[in-house]
Length: 64
Image (cartoon, rainbow, N blue to C red; front, side):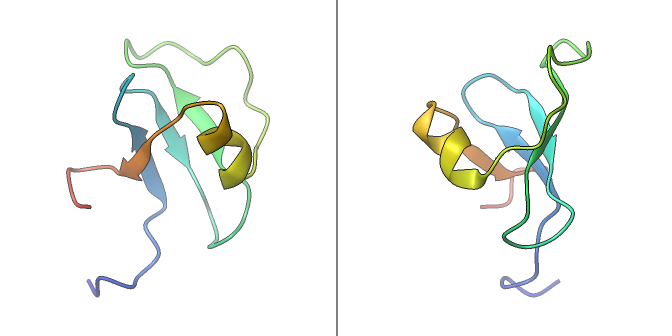
């Protein structure tokens, strides 16, 4: 996979919560909390909203 390819599966490196972003620049949807339970809301949010609230999202699987 190219380094510029869109990575859909994301993880918050602080909390371990997982997210999904189906298209580049699209909304990011919470999938599960670090313990595997459902998030309190599955409403999609913009990347800007998530980073402004302290989320540090990285591609899942350890790639940066």
